[in-house]
Length: 437
Image (cartoon, rainbow, N blue to C red; front, side):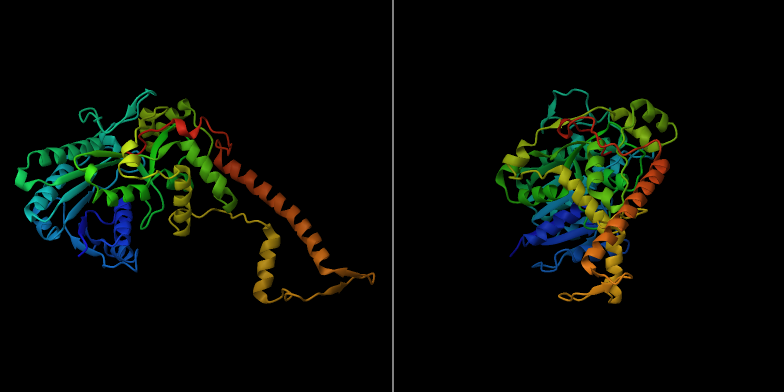
């Protein structure tokens, strides 16, 4: 019989990908949500991810804050994946104390129920790279490894909750008797980006497509493809040499401007105007006086973190995907699903000529394949329709160019002081930062 895997917070961005890959590998999967009623629509989407799955996805209600709800949820389960909801991919705009204690209590409640069940062999905890370094550093020679721990005392409340939750997990396992021992494996992914299976997360890709910021401050991101994160969890269920270890999951480093340029190159022809102009530090400071998002970028401007992902590659056997391709793939899905604002205008190859061709096809006025027609002219000459069509397209093409030039001028006026320069600050592979708070 196939092993039964329980995954918490089943409808979050990363969990959905883990569930999909588990089902594709033939596992029985049971997911938890805090409220079945509130999550009804997303649960239906989850259950349709793998129509050919050997076992139907089971979803049960379990509240991390209520220990009594976990005994039934974990019944007969062999593996538990506690997929903590990922830190937002943008710095938090709202200030205030994050739920530090609830994060720790959730770990304790789930782990206690796992020990009591006697069927659980291994727990995989999805932590974060921010439990390794609480913030980006200006030191370019420091490469963070799984041996590093962030300082909870100096971290902001949200990051502090991540650090303490992971530490409580290690402490819990350490204190178990030999008869109660359970394997613990921890994943520390950097910012997970990629195509959403359910809703869009509020991350830098969506922000740039929605024009949520008027330019690109010198902020960098540590990025990993969410599908690599999911694969790491699935592989870690059965590997022997992962128990008792942390695993940095990291694909590469990108400046915000690198992301903007990649998106602009791909989607500007579709009518999306991506802000690619650099925002000088002084201008960012001025913007921060009335923009909360800009304010949260100030402490991390120009800073970076480097991560050693050797265990990801050598132990888990995962070759990281190209993160520039990841952001483009995410954007494609956001657009297809209608999860970002539609562009004000759409450019398509052929301009008005193509549009006219489509209109003719719809009303049946296009000539059938193989037919040849001649069109009389006023002076009695006969002209080949193909030649005439080429002349028309040439004239229409000129009109299209003028229309696009005019539209570009209007857009530039609208976006001032931003322009679409296509010149990066630095190479994409030199940076990274905690923009994931």
